[in-house]
Length: 238
Ligand SMILES: [Zn+2]
Image 1 (spheres, rainbow, N blue to C red):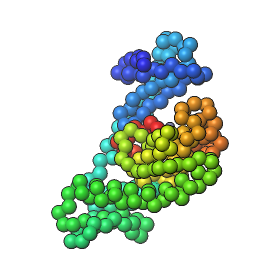
Image 2: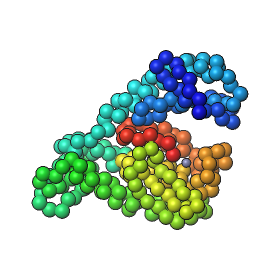
Image 3: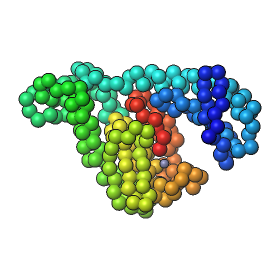
Image 4: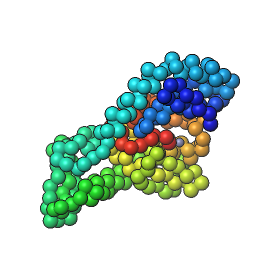
């Protein structure tokens, strides 16, 4: 790995067998990465990056703002997302089993025992998200197994810091990030298809992209959508 510094910005440069340069800024910290063709020299890379400086800074500012919105306090009328839709949090205290439910298409109501901590509320909502994902995933997996002619032997949902999903091709096991419960269903499906394509091709190469184009022709749009607001503390490599 090579780095070049342009002012205060450190650019990670990766030489690859590609035709064009590809610049990317990643949340949450605004890490800058440039993929460049193998035969391009440092001077060209520098000039190219300089020409994109305004864009890089714009992206970094965007991630800073998104990041500030991601710490949840679990207070009344706070925004919480489920399947891409925004809900207002309603916190009710009751001496009964904790409960989370969507009400009137507007509220995400969480019923907790009096004195429940932020941590506990966070835990209850997360477990609710997990249940929701686990309820909807079997039908989606089944649908794509048929379309793609692959078999997912095992799958699960867990909190991951840096990935939307992973695929263990040997065990044919897929993990999906719990955070996906906050995203629109077509974004969840996109990640699922991405991980399932790994059962056909391990690497992110041309063959992989061809499968994505075949099964989900608009996957690039979905990928972009997944990176828009709201993001959590997640770097979206997958
Ligand atoms: Zn992948």
